[in-house]
Structures are given as C-alpha cells and as structure tokens.
Amino acid sequence: MKIFLDVGAHHGETVEIALDPRWAFDEVHAFEPASSCRQILRRYRDSRLRVHALALSNRSGRTALFGAGLLGASVFADKRQLDPIGADIEDITLHSTAAWFLTHLSPDDEVYLKLNCEGSECDVLEDLLDAELTSWVRAVYVDFDVRKVPSQAHRQADLEHRLRTAGVNYTTPDDVPGVAAWLERCCARSRPGLSAVRYRLGLHRPLYAWQRSIARAALPPSLFRWAATRFGAMSRLR
Image (tube, rainbow, N blue to C red; front, side, top):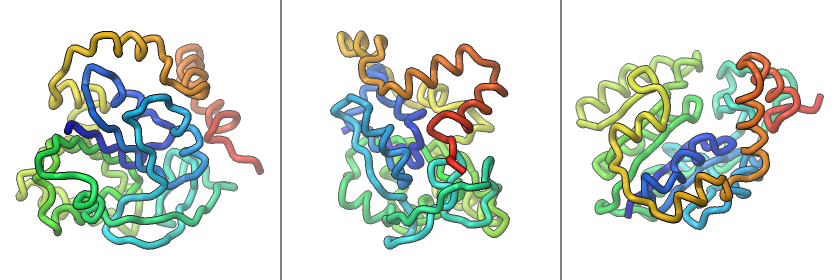
C-alpha cells in the first residue's frame, strides 16, 4: 500500500495536502498527542485518514507535552514556545516508532514520512535507525526543530550523519519549502478522477480548515498569526 505518516499533525495542515487524490495514498496516518488538535483532525471526512492519540518516539510510556495545542508543542520543557504564557501541559502517550512500524506496516509498503514534532524527530529517526527500519521508508521530510531545544540541539549533526551513512532519502525545509513541493519531487501522481472533484470542492474539510484558509487569504501574514493565536484553535484562555 501507499501510506503517508504525518508525525506532529497539529490542526491538519499537512493532512490537507496528503489527502489530495493526486498522490493516491491508500492510508494517511496523523499522529497528534494534543487532545485539542485531535478534535479538529477527527472532523476531516475521508475514510483513508487515521488519527492516533499518541506521539511517536524511541520508547513507549507516558510523558508531559509542554504547550499542548500550540504550533510549537514539545515533550522537551526547554523548547522555545511562541506563546508560552498560560500554555497547557498535557499528559500524553509515547509509542516506540519501530514497534509501530512492525505492527502496522510491511517492507512492501510505499511509505512517506513527514516529521514536524518539535525535537522528537530525533527520537523517531534514531529509533528507526537503531531497528534498521529506515529502508521501509521511501522518503522523509523532516523539520529539525531540535535546534530550538537547548538541551537537545547537539543531536542534529550526529543524526544527519547517521541518515546520510544509512542512505536515507531525507529532505528538510531548507532544501524544499513545504510538504506539497516535496511530494511533487518524490511522489508519483495518479489520475484521481471523480475523487478530485470532492477534494477541490473541499467537502472533506472541517469548518475550522475553511475558516483558517479564508482568514489566511484575507489577512496580512502578521495579522493572521496574531488572530490565530488570540482567537483561533491556538488561542489560550488566561
């Protein structure tokens, strides 16, 4: 099967792209530990989407998510947050990435992995490297947010060396600006037929996604960011 894994799905910004029928994904898995974000993700109407209430990691267990619901939410307390005042701390589930792969995927699957998980990308990729499972992934798009975590930033250089040594096909936002552009480069297109009509009409989208796209189109970027953090799903009641 052709499978997309969105690790750190937030409000579905990447889910929206992955559900486009032109990529012909059989399954789209959204991993999101923050409960407020999952409420939005579960309103997407597409039978291929699976929303998982957990954070992929290099171990299984429980931990704290700092800034839960914010764009920069992290399991690392020293991660720099855009809006740290009053941000939520949520008890979440961690799940070993290698264990999840072995349970839900096979070497014959065509897997595309997107990582934007505020430092946890190192845990995820190291777990796959240690388990020798990176060959199961066709391509990786990774934002190295670990550089924003003072206690963990040193891990990036070593991890990138390991990825190159293992021959992992990975791309960062410095190489290609955005998930859609990355898929254009590494993922074959299909002829989606009638499913494209439903997608273009936005019949799969929750109300929040419509509101977000309208506001983004109507407002200057700085005003959109201000409104999103004060009135949107990223807002916090003081």
